[in-house]
Image 1 (cartoon, rainbow, N blue to C red):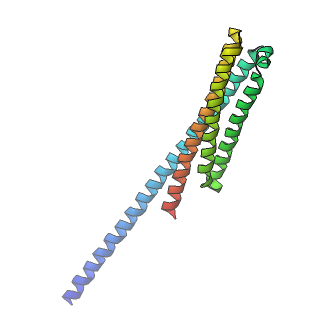
Image 2 (image 1 turned 180 degrees about the vertical axis):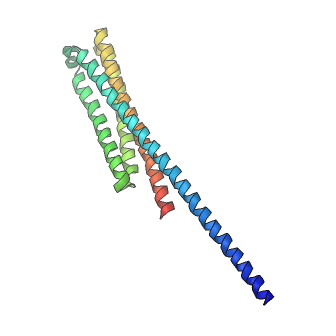
Length: 184
């Protein structure tokens, strides 16, 4: 009977240790999940601030373009160039919108959309450089030259912010994917 009591008490000790470890494991998981949730929310907030920066650029660009003489814009067909540049940025913003939606619906598609935003940002950069060089050659009124340069620089800045927001959404996608793997 003494052997049986020693075995039985040893078994109880092992069970108590297992229960304690299970409780600790659950608590650690809760803490880790809370930390992950907090980091995910910070990423969302950071992305929202980047998107707000994009909106800030819009008013600056509009002000500069409104301050220019229309004849300076029409002379070198800068109005068409600026429309194309703005169109590319609008496309990038639409891609960002799709990325944000895809995070909850189809996270794997965010990578493709991020690549598209990056492609658009590169096109905007190239177009921006061409417009600045063209303006230096074609616009003789310094005031209009500076206003156009600042306007297209603002549009290019919006494209950069789109790229930054895309990067942030891609990071969020990776966190969501990792969290899903851990939880399931």
